[in-house]
Length: 219
Image 1 (cartoon, rainbow, N blue to C red):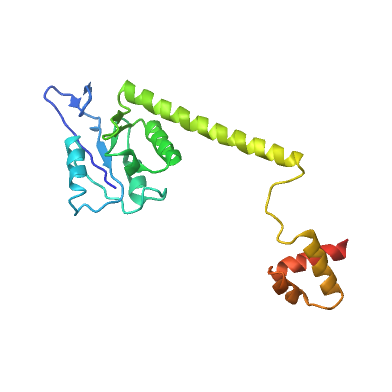
Image 2 (tube, one colour; image 1 turned 60 degrees about the horizontal axis):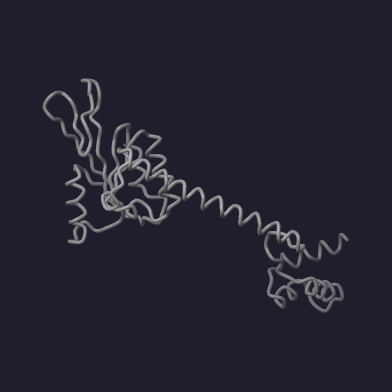
C-alpha cells in the first residue's frame, strides 16, 4: 500500500494542486495533501517501479506500503491512510483493484473518502472525483451496485416465499431423518445400544442424541 502526499505552491499566494485549479489559502490553513495508495507488492522489484513513477508523476511523494492482500478489509496501512485524510485531500491509486477487489468494499471506501470531504483519483481508469465527470461516473457505479443488492434481496425473498408455500422452512437441515430419530430412540430405550454407541452408529455428536432422547422423554 502506498500513501503519498504532495504539496505545490505557485507564486501568487495560492495553492495549485495537480490537475486542479487554484485553491484560495489563508496563512492558518493547512496545505491539502495528495495521498496515493498501492496494494500489496514488492517495491524492490522492477514490476513496481512503473507504478511508483506514475504515482510520483501524479504529484505524490509519500508512499505507504501495504503488505496485506487487497481482498481483505483489515489492512492496517489502508486504515492509517484513511485516518490521515482530511477535507480537500486526494487519494490516488494506480488501479482500482489496488484499493480493493471487492466492489462492495470499494464503494464503502469511496463513500468514506467522500464523507471526509476528500477526492479520489484512479490513474488507469481515469476516474477523478474532484471533477464533475468523475463524480458522475462513481454515482453510476454506485447505482449499479445498489441495483445488484436490491435484486439479490428480491431473489432471496422470492425463494423464501416459494419454500414456505412448499412447506419448507429455512435453517440447517436436520442431521437425522425422522426415521433415523425413531431408530435411535428405539435402540437406546430398549437397551440395545447406549447413547454413545447410537451416536457413533449414525455418525452424529453425542449431544445430538442426548437432545433427541430428552425431547422424546418430555413428549
